[in-house]
Image (cartoon, rainbow, N blue to C red; front, top):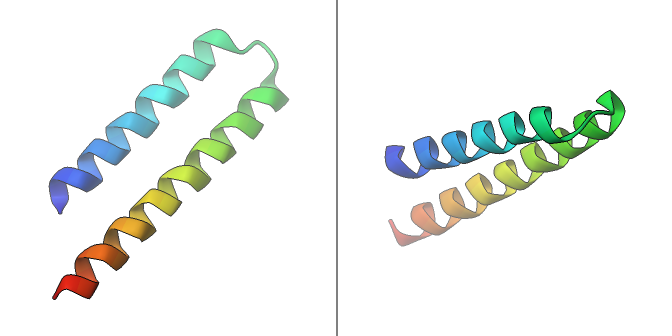
Length: 55
């Protein structure tokens, strides 16, 4: 379980760092980061639901 959380965090962190390099507009960068965070939370929720249902 910790492995999934760490991988999700590192993936999110890397994507945010790439956006900081690629995107000049602060507003567009913030919007993109918010979307990345929402997707990461959704992935975590799905993972937690799947793993807790197996127990």
